[in-house]
Length: 275
Image (tube, rainbow, N blue to C red):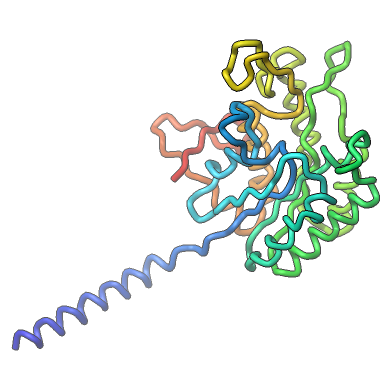
């Protein structure tokens, strides 16, 4: 009799679990978001802090079903990223529905550094390879124009620093019908709002003695501070939302703070929290 009661209780419990699953649905499949690019995106080590790549704060803008896998590396161009076999392992690991965000250009355009320089035509071909091989795995490529450097003219107007390589990125996106995030333009607009002086706080600009990692100070107009990296990541996420990127745009982190401010979708300075 006791065994029969236990069996009935077990069946009842299993039925309850099945009913709950039927009403709640299975949890959404996790998406892996790969970042490929250069030092403006890459993870940084403690010894270079407060230098921050914009890929570092990016995970905080998504919920727990998005896994950001930052494969960007300092000093890499499209050519060296491929030659060092950094791309093929990503292709091998890609699953249907994953994303690859692709932002190069800073090192490709460095004509004074022949070990990394890539002519615009070759840069374009490399982007095509990234896109086609991502799509070959039924994953989603997104092209991103190279984020701006901090360079103002004498009148205080921000200057374009990646003309040929941003144009090549946009050409590939247009021809292959790939989502494009024009981070070059958006970051220049952001710096213009800050102005020539205040925009220093977005970059690795340090006076002697400001930080033990840089006792002599630092005057870097390419790499970001923590604030600058977050601002650039926020620009990227605003386009994920605006362009309604499939599967990804509905997985933005929900604010949990009682005084949560409006989201990045309307251009406000949102502070999403990690779930």
